[in-house]
Image (tube, rainbow, N blue to C red):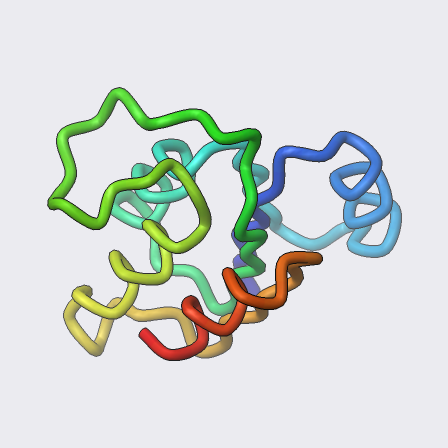
Length: 104
């Protein structure tokens, strides 16, 4: 199993690591990191946070680029179906942002 975990909070990263010892997890801190990981690897599960410190990415992305987990959700929705993760979990404290991500 391959998992991608996106969050900008060190405590959440630590807790996820502690709960997933021995599992192949790629840890991303920015939307750029997560999208680059998705380009290189097929993941079974992806865990996305919405708010990522408000940093705009340096990557050239379409107009929806806002430097949040929403960028990653949109990217996943545009991936070929055979490369999309089996499961996507949104773990955001931002209910409005989480709903936008779910609706993609």
